[in-house]
Image (cartoon, rainbow, N blue to C red):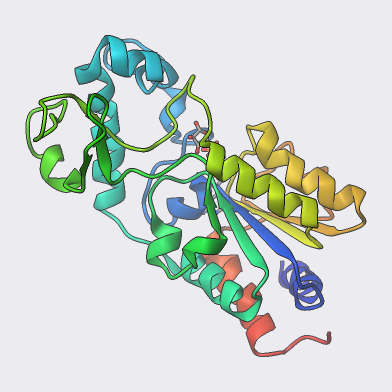
Length: 259
Ligand code: APR
């Protein structure tokens, strides 16, 4: 694995424009559950016998807000009960070393921002868990933690409407601003695209890697398991983000590698 990490470090060291794509596997090392694969949230059904993708969907939030919020609260408690890890810190450090290094994350835990990634170069394509907002009057409510310890669904202090987090639930559209920023940056091209801890289940996650390959760029994946991406990237580093990223960025920041 050491050689693979050095190869990725060399490619990044020689590049200006770099995109890091992250998924639940990056936060798995913080103790958060992933969605698919071993122990994934989606492998089972809810206590009500529903697939989690149904329980956590936009239509369910309208049809049965208490049920949807039961699972939103589980996600919220998990995110609030943990924090970012050395993998997030390494990515933030890489963004300091490389002013044109961007992060595209599917995670809603806010850990990239908390670990120091610059918000202006962070695209949170599935939104974030906070601040909550009222579906009726639009009022913002920053008290996610407090609401999770009260009866659900949380209600708006202004109008009594039902609050929701600014996350993309199943069957909902992706945030337009995030999509616009992603494609504006993709049009400028990325010389290196690094996928970390994602099963790459969505086309907008696979596309940046395919575009980089077609343009002759370097692509790599950091994941202990093989995914559909593994055969498509130049290098699959079979390891945990927490083990690989600090070593990878350490090579770059200490110039231990030849440019
Ligand atoms: N380091 C790196 N990768 C890991 C680690 C780890 N320590 N642990 C697990 N993984 C890998 C798994 O092998 C898997 O390929 O992380 C990946 C997690 O995949 P998913 O659970 O599918 O998570 P993700 O790809 O982020 O899902 C994308 O699906 O439902 C939506 O909104 C949800 O944002 C989520 C999206």
